[in-house]
Image 1 (cartoon, rainbow, N blue to C red):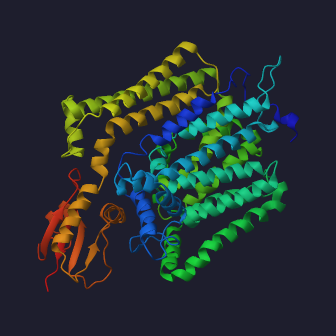
Image 2 (image 1 turned 180 degrees about the horizontal axis):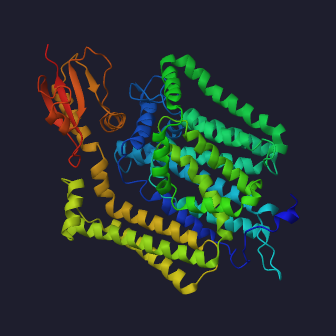
Image 3 (image 1 turned 120 degrees about the horizontal axis):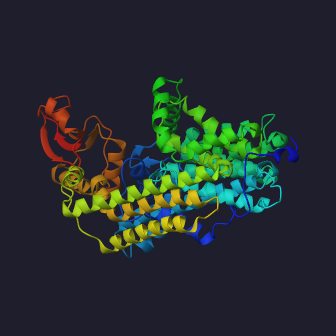
Length: 584
């Protein structure tokens, strides 16, 4: 199609609606989003503490833990080494300085989360500039008004980029994941970089191809083939005939060859260093692939709508409104990064949030291009929906906090007590001040929307992202001590360390029984507790549920072995640990 045909698009926008969002506001939103809840807490199971355990092992171990992620002496042969590398380097560089103000362990925990700031910056910049490049292209421009007044391409691209980033930050499913020392934040960052590289190839094919190769290799280093294949398939599809990058096909080797060289630069030394680790890594990946099943389809239909909220309805609307422009780059490129990962999930044996995360960025991209096609009345209705939902959420957070500290309302207080058994609530005045400022920010945002009647396209997206961030800020300030108490393994790790020091005799070893990976990582992080793989160990550390002990279905539930110690996290009703000595 010629650009003249593209001018008759479903997008309708005036230059007033393309008013630029002030950069300090966008920067402040991003900083509050990533910093709130990132610090002043312990690592939680499972992926959060597993990532930290691999970082600490790399620094403390003399074996190949830098090359092959491990949790102590246990091979963690699932993901790649990228998260381990980034976190271990930050711990080595920054924890000596941080340890001047806190304990060595807490300094390492704080330093391990510094890469999250990098992943957030990379994701935000890649999304913003990628959408900006697509939004200023002639195919995406809004309908020319009879007497003029439509925004120029640069302003139009900028407003769409602002909206895409705000919609990404408003996505519910990745809020907690972005604050973990896991593979998900890095995977989102490199997927966004791959999207940016694909859009960059439209006008600068060589630099775009090299960037794409780097992004694909880093996805492999982050989550292995499960991280690489969705983005690789999406990128390859864009080079097929009839797609935006078909004319750039000769530059494809400039992306694939560097990516392959980088991946082999890790895989060959890894294979030479430890065939057991690499065999387990290959087994984990091959066992993750399966034929489509009703269980996977049912989980996708059940979980994706809330995980991708609020972007997925707008993404579907964009595909409908722009259905006559499916071959245009601003639709086809995000669609490739949405459709191919979704199809890839159908061939996985199990899918959950790390896999769902691959759909977040393309869903937000498409949602941004749906906004110029909406009528003003629809946008106003969505604005009111955001105001009501997040006002109710913020009020609920405050009501729960009042119930936690005062015992009123009684029913809410009892429900909270069941989840935080043994927790002694103490008011933190700095946290209370932060929560009050977050609430005032939301009130001011709502007042701005009601009194100024803004026409800017980003007004609805800033309500959604601002409301989610304000709610998260309140949770991270008012509720973080209680949540940390309910999810941290620090205390039970200390109790277990004391029990081991008391009962383990010289020459004895301890082997785990039914001990989860997250629990094992927590014990290593907090107390450096290691276990043996030998079946000759006379001591067993058993993870079991109280119900299994009561009904006799757990191993050694008949007390046939000598129980040396029992412990559990106070608020956890479903998990306990036992140290057993086997009878001769």
